[in-house]
Image 1 (cartoon, rainbow, N blue to C red):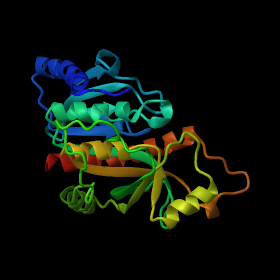
Image 2 (image 1 turned 60 degrees about the vertical axis):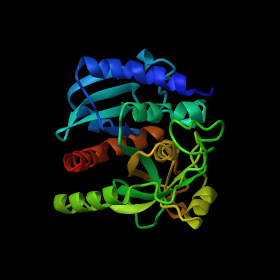
Image 3 (image 1 turned 180 degrees about the horizontal axis):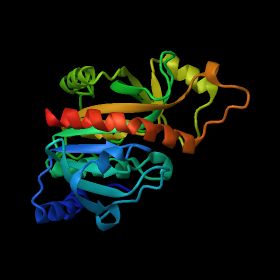
Length: 278
């Protein structure tokens, strides 16, 4: 399914009408990954907009994802958070996966903060770590394939700096003040929904990956295409390294969500402090 600019504008107009009712004008967007909904729960005076109320929006079926936009105050700023994202493995087209980002652009979002639960590839990582995404390797279909929507950006957008250097510097500064140690690395995305094999883990490490997951890169590409500044963070929820895999090891989706939930308090506090300074 390909969304035309008219389709996207219709969805944005619906969200805008709700925001106007509450006199909200968010400039900061947030996409919450599996088990990381604690950030949305910190939003004050929340206005909930179910995806089912928005024309053309699918619903999130992934574990640990809800299906709402939530607008309100966070860190003293008006934000618009996605409580649940769309994934290619759910059967949605890439055009559907990036629809919310394009809607955010039409709503005036200037900064996008994305999060995900990821498997740690880097041997120096541990479960519970938070990783600033410094760069990415997209092994999913590129979401910009197909007719280019000039209203959002050029046919061949630059991706030299997918993650904003000033936002990364701000995260370093804030985490130091909090006494919170952050990893920094490269996020690799693949299709899922099966978890990766040990050989794939070795491959991802060999090409420069530090963490692996099934989301994020399409939304980041769409955001950068549209000129939105991006900050990304992964919660390391399991160790995707062959040397950590016992003979009876099984990657468990429910356990990953629980691990993400355990990390969400620190991520939420970090995001709030960053937003205060934007």
